Every structure is written in C-alpha cells, then in structure tokens.
Length: 257
Length: 312
Ligand SMILES: Cc1cc2nc3c(=O)[nH]c(=O)nc-3n(C[C@H](O)[C@H](O)[C@H](O)COP(=O)(O)OP(=O)(O)OC[C@H]3O[C@@H](n4cnc5c(N)ncnc54)[C@H](O)[C@@H]3O)c2cc1C
Ligand SMILES: Cc1cc2nc3c(=O)[nH]c(=O)nc-3n(C[C@H](O)[C@H](O)[C@H](O)COP(=O)(O)O)c2cc1C
Ligand code: FES
Image (cartoon, rainbow over all chains, first blue to last red; front, side, top):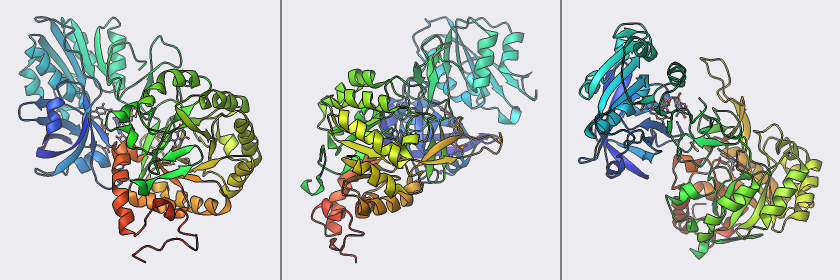
C-alpha cells in the first residue's frame, strides 16, 4: 500500500461510457492479487474532494502496468476520463484483500459472474486462475450490447455467456437467467456486481460456495473512518466488517447484503 | 524543530498538529504510512460505554469541497478500546487525546473514569457535539447549563485534563465556551461538524441513510476560523482548532485566529500523508513569515502585540 503519482499510458472508450485506463508506476509491482482496488484522486483541487475506488482489472507486473476499466458516472469519473497519455494520476493502493487463489486445485472449474462495472476485477482473476490450471466459465451481464466490454478477452480465458437486459446481445435478461437456462458445472463461484445481483445469486443458489466482491461508499479506503461498514451474518448486532480493509472480497454468506 | 513545540494542559507537543477524532481510527492504519511519533498528538475515535455499531450505510456523501458523514459513533466500547486498541500506541512518542461520548451523564463519567486511567491517554476530549446520533452528545452540546453540568461531573472523575469539543450548531458558541470553562474545562476543541443534508435527484431521497450528516472539510474552514476568533478572545483556556485544515497555511490561519494547536480530519482521507507533510512544511513557512516560534502566532489576528509578518 503506497501513494504514488502514476503515469497515464493510454485512455480509451471501449464501450458506451466505459473507459479503459492504463497507467504505469513502481507501486504496480505490488498488485498481484485480483479483487484488490486502488483509490484515485482525480483532481488536485478540492473539487471533487474524495478519492474514487476503482478495481484492478489487469496487471502486467513486468512492465508495472495497471489496467482499470470504469464507467463515466459523475463528476469524478468524468474528470478521470479526461486524463491523457503522459499525465499523472495520484494513486493509493493496492487496497483491500483480493480473491483467494488457492481454494481450487488444478483442473477444477471456477464460475465467474460479473454484472456491469463489477466485471473488471474478474478479468485479472480469470487470468490468474487459468495460469494455475483451473477451468474458467464466465457469465457477464450488461444493460445492452453497447454497454458490453471485454467479451473477447474473457473468451481467451474460457467459455463465456453474456446476458443483456434488452436482449441485444446474448441471453435476454440477467446473469441469473443464464444460470437458469444453461447447465453449468462448476466447483466455486466468484462474483462482483451490483448488490441486487449478488442478492439474486444468493437466492437462486442457496448453497453457493465461493466469494463475493462488495461495494460501499467510502471515505478513507484504508479502514480508518468506518464509512464502509456492513453487518455480519450470524454475528452479534455490533459485529461488522469494513468493505475497504476487511474486503472488498468476502466468502459468500459472510456479509449481510 | 523546537520552533514548533506547543504546550497545552496535559499535552506537551513537539508540533501543534494532531489528527482529529474519527478521522484516524486508533492509528493502526496510518502507522502503515508513517512513523506516528512525528505527530504532535493524536485524537482517537470516540469511545462509548458499550460497543456501538453506528448508522446504516450510506454513511458518507461528498459535497462541494467537503463531505457529510453520519458514522454514528461506531466503536468497540471503552473496555475493548483500552484492551485492544491503545496498547499498540505505546511504541510511539505520541500524546493521545481520548475522545469520549455517551447518551447520559453516567455513560460519560464511566468512560471518562476508565479511559483517563490508561497510561497511554494524556487528555480527554469530551464529545458533546456529535450531530449523528439520536442520543449521545448533541443534546449536551447545545444547552450551556447542560454542558456545564456534564463538564463538572466528568472533571470530578477524570484523572487527566478534560477538553470539551464544541458544536458549531448553536446560535452562541461563546456562551457554550464560557459555560464549560466556568465548569472546569482545561481546554476546548472546536469545531465539530456542521449539520447538513444532500438529496439524490434520481431517488429523490437523502443520500445518507441517516438523512442528515455532519459537514467537514475545506468548506467549513471559514466558519471554524470565525468561531475560534470569537471564542479565543472570550476564554482563557487553550483551543485545539479544526475544521477544513489541509495545508500549512491553514494551520497558521487557525493559530492566528486563536488556536493553540490544530487538528486535521477529513484531509487525511484525501492524502494519508497530510499530517507529516504539513509538519515538515511549517518551519519554512514560519521563516518566511519571520516568526521565531509558532506560539507567537496564537491569537495574532486580534492581539495588539502580535508579531507582524514580513508581508504586511
Ligand atoms: C471496491 C470498489 C471497486 C470499484 N471498482 C470499480 C471499477 O473497477 N470500475 C468502475 O467503473 N467503478 C468501480 N467502482 C465504483 C466507483 O467507485 C464509482 O462509480 C465512482 O466512485 C463514481 O464516482 P463519480 O465521481 O463518477 O460519481 P459520483 O456519483 O459523483 O460520486 C459521488 C461520491 O459517491 C461515491 N460513489 C458513487 N458511486 C459509487 C459506487 N458505486 N461505489 C462506491 N462509491 C460510489 C464516489 O466515490 C463519490 O465519493 C468501485 C467501487 C468500489 C467500492
Ligand atoms: C468520518 C468522520 C468521523 C468523525 N468522528 C468523530 C468522533 O468520533 N468524535 C468527534 O469528536 N469528532 C468526530 N468527527 C469530527 C472531526 O473530528 C472534526 O471535528 C471535523 O471533521 C472537522 O474537521 P475537518 O474538516 O478537518 O474534518 C468526525 C469527522 C469525520 C469526517
Ligand atoms: S472507507 Fe474508511 S473505513 Fe472503509
């Protein structure tokens, strides 16, 4: 965990309002765990004031290059999308705990389920699991075809199913519809996406084994401010986890969604 | 670095800078970024009698040059704090300001009695100004007689000096300050957050689950400066100033207003190194201003014999 001004290598819009940002810096050599995130300062003024949490989507440790994918949402990500090659970004990271990589053994199958802007961290995960000899099946959900990204990249790692809400690409509906329609055999589930999607997954696969990556509004991003706290299932009422420093990845069922 | 030392009741500080309560946890996280011994002091997160979970999320929302928070005094309770959180601070040369909160006078006194005995704790900071909990603090912070009565009771049981943290959400902050001074407070710390709200245009509902939250960050700095300027002229106890500090220049401004030490809150979230950075910039800034010792600045905006700066 360090703070560094990293250099923008490239920035491009790869789908509707979805940007791929590549940066280079010394600290990137530490980013070996998929599911971790970075906290970016997008302006040197007080507007906007807080950092923005963005997942690690891919890392080339050799060339110390980090790839991030983000959706241009509000003021912060709009400013980020204006960063050009050669400019710097104030990056704090890597933060949080990533997906465990040693739960499966070689030859077993990992099911990766991503929704919208929850898809990015699963890409680095897919690559790392595949390198360890596991089979990858990915189910990616988007609003429509114009919002979809990285389908081919995931296809390089294993079988891919797509769902879109309007049916313009793949199965019409949600990732849960894909799981209903297709008979996918897998050993462990890894998922990241909106909380409604994670809840639907929990409801549809009650005995699911695996890991969810969660999201919450953040202040510090390092565990000091108690902004991102969630209740724990089956714990005392005062038991909690912090999404930023205890997560964002948790075993399925641990955190009350 | 001698130029920077300040001395307040119970606090011998090598420089006037401390992280503000609630913005520094119990120090562990920031200890991964720098040696906490460089700090003048550190204020830890509010301790209550029992563990508290706090408010539902979202607990924070960004605003223009600031943020709203409604954490709700989440903490593991005074016993756990003393057992698990304070010991690691032993390894630093760092006076600790223990922020305490409660719902009743008995709560406050129980926490004050216990935590003031901890060898790691230098002074108490009585939080009567948290705007984010229904019971706990703010009712003590908006009525002068209630605040004075609580201060007196806590003073009677505390083994360490007591600072009272004032709320800006009052019509006459000087009246509050005078009341707690009269009741025996050793110092003041001000200001806590300003009560605020944001509404989401899409959902048409408040962004923060608690609806209201406390505004902090650069946006509130002028309010803090005005209040410290006013209160410091009325009381004779020292003030720990805070509210939007994010540069060495801000620190000077707070001291000129009348603060004897300065706490930094929200800026830690923007830059985890902000406290050591400001501390390292202060000597050069003092030199530029032709100030020999930082204490010369205290109240310089209203004291007649304040040292004039070169630029004047
Ligand atoms: C651990 C984690 C990883 C993330 N990874 C990615 C990613 O890889 N790609 C991506 O596009 N988005 C990601 N997000 C969401 C991303 O942080 C928000 O979309 C972004 O902060 C929005 O900022 P804004 O200024 O554009 O929007 P605004 O709505 O103007 O932001 C206002 C405030 O709300 C916060 N906020 C808004 N939306 C979210 C959200 N969904 N989650 C948390 N805070 C939010 C902002 O940080 C800011 O403080 C991630 C969030 C978390 C918590
Ligand atoms: C997330 C957060 C949590 C806080 N928690 C506490 C607290 O537990 N006790 C307290 O006295 N003040 C608390 N405060 C108030 C700060 O200590 C400080 O008075 C205020 O934020 C103004 O300073 P700033 O603008 O530098 O943040 C909190 C502030 C923030 C932003
Ligand atoms: S964002 Fe501050 S504790 Fe998680």
